[in-house]
Length: 402
Image (cartoon, rainbow, N blue to C red; front, side, top):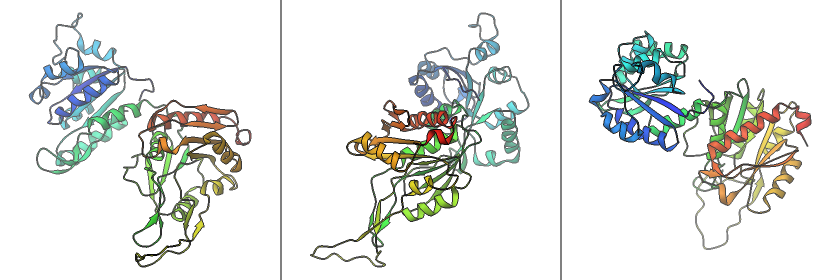
């Protein structure tokens, strides 16, 4: 898969009810500044019209290999030569089989056969068709041939069935296209990421916790997987879906997280502590619900172990990265934490601008000073952060530590 930004995408549409989703995908792609050239099979035209796709893409839609609008009469050559990548969405079971066997009886299949650019395929079909051994063999062969398979997803299907076979949603496909462009600069690296809040129980229904959504940690895990790393994600309670590339370990309390990190830290190359771990826990947890009373209630707290500090002091510790979420004196407090824990890198951000938000402004602090990242989405910030970490890893750990 290419690592260069996709500026021109050839989007193929085959016959399937999921073709209606492709209209929204085209709109999203164009909004991203990507030039979309749509090519439709004859069957696709039975589900959605070329006029719709032309209106959304702003470009002539090709449906025939005999289209006279191409000056040299060879659209099957010209269209693929101008594309940075080809995406077929939806890709029917029939078209997938055609790709495997090198079929070339329509414009889209010829373009896929005569291409020099990467090919991505988003399957869409009935559950039984997807599960059929023939389809699974075809998918396995496409993967061997270097074709990227995007999805499918699981859920309700037009036929009334429920199961695997749904085409990925437009937003998911857009994200998958962005993922395909990430350089595999972390290939061969093992990365452990902590994310989300911890939940320190007071009684069966109450706890000490915080407002962390886990979005930043999950974004770091996703970006690391995109870049080729083997990712372990230790997560406190969140409502997020974990990145498909990551091994997920769900925990509740700070003690649970410490245990999970300790058990999995061996042989990790990088440890990125993004989780908002509670500094304190109740000294005693009531087995029964504490009843409300018209008097003051005192809660004794005990400090939790600082997971990042513990890992950083281990023998043969991995490259440790911390996050410092502060409400004031951001850079001063973050740098103090970095030096106290002997970290090569710490990421500073204001809690009031980060917790629960989709965008974030990060400042990276290392031995060379501060590196301010532009305010952007958390996934883009995570990619920039990992690029910085990769550059630091080229130097020895001894040089990187304060």
